[in-house]
Image (spheres, one colour):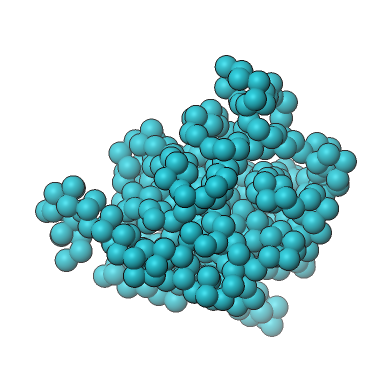
Length: 436
């Protein structure tokens, strides 16, 4: 019924419906965002990790913090999984969460903001203090119509700073992303850029015409990555984190940029980030010996390549992957196969979230991007695929299972959601393997 209404109703009516729900939610819960500092994180990849890291730093600084991400809802020390299969909750749920955070004394709320959520006006009537851009690569192209429209949707979060009633509005932007210039065009009281590279950066006070005009620039130097973690230096302050991959340096810089904008010093940032063991379902190590097994949410070509790149090239990799159904981003399926072929010694293609699509067809579309078919095993049952990957692994191997991370459901035909957790399945199958 819901899909039928979407097809037959005029687009302007659907927009007014979503806008009306946002306004209703704000009125019912009495505009709670105005009484707290709200931080919004958007981009294609890294949003969940940045939300988690920023919240950790704010807590280390002594603030009471709430956070919403694709993996959990958090108000101070109480957390519960996000089982909605929706990164950004609907308007009434979101405003209710903000009201609860306020009633429990939270001073900050960090929110993962999606392009789909923006299209449905879920960000409306939330007064943002800080907005963050992590990176942008093609995703949700079918629903948005083009990459440019996808980017425009993300830009609306930055545009919303003008509507915010807060006294100081700040944007934080990854200067190393090729779309940085687009997001720097949006107005903000203060613009903070973070980078790992050399850029000609001008302070906004200089009134320069150069594209990278920022109030503050934060650069990581002395960068090192290994199979055990990452390290870098910012202004003589060394950071050594247990998180894996160069991309997590960018995620850390985004969180640090937020902290500095709120008057939190680098030493507090260092203490907070070095305490972070994992971000659930994000390069999460499940098995350490006799081989290593990781579960990661990577479901876009860019994220998949970064996940695989986190490990040494000479580490034999067994990779389990699929692709989401529901007509979403079919273009990326052969590309996922191509990337897997470039990095993986053994590729096991399996089910992910097929929705109403034929899962075998999804797998075949991924396989079409792989030239060397001898590398490929196709095992539709995801549990069996994970079991097979573990049985093939030898000491020194790395098993990387991507696509779902810590998601609690698998979405299949008929609108059904099957309880699922890649991490739990790995532990169960590994235990069975060791008992044989």
